[in-house]
Image 1 (cartoon, rainbow, N blue to C red):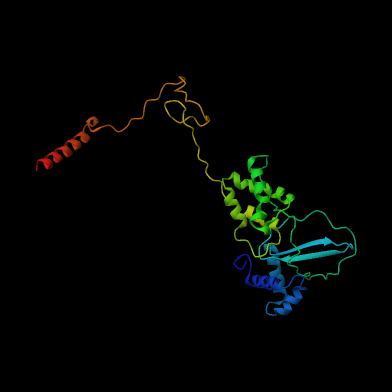
Image 2 (tube, helix red, strand yellow):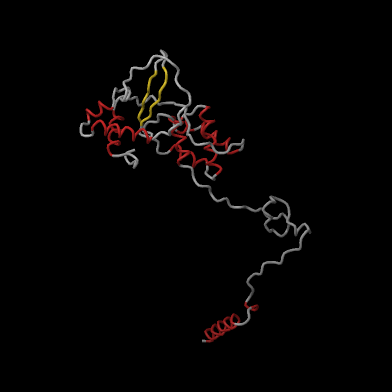
Length: 275
């Protein structure tokens, strides 16, 4: 958080201050400017805009049981994935009491357990083994860290992203470490955090090495790439037997400069033995 190069030093300082406030604290731009006179109201508003753009400061508008619009706000030390705005517009009702141009009460817990997933389009699906394995892994994350408890709906939404890791060659252990290691002190939304890491840390595809089965006949040669078992064409009599690979011969097989070198070495050994 403090090393996020997207944030100015003013925005980082205000974020640290907001995180230190108790849940439900009543704070707005004017009050922040009063407590930080050197920054000023315009500077505070600009810093808050930075926090919103970076995902540290999140607003959500909803209608309460009395039909009034309420804006819930929470701040977090982990940037949250921004979700595209919904086309749904709140119904009619009495307007809320929030004054224009001010920040609503800051509640660092109002974003807990939100069922939001990354805006990126999911990778290809298709009832394969990777998708099944990814779903099981996500459902068991809470056993590794209770802060990463996901609902069944969240697991279904995130499984295609996790399956893409496995398709690219990542192991279950590597994927689990990427999701569970280095968690922030507080996790306000497990689905958001897991979705962000799946998208942001997606590895490049690993090179897949082709393996070949050995011929079950006497030759022991590797079978063609598309044949997993059985004998080769030569052992089946469908193709001529390949010429054996030449192997290094004995000294007697050497000619030319090689034969002269061997003869010289033998002569020196003979002289040494006589001496």
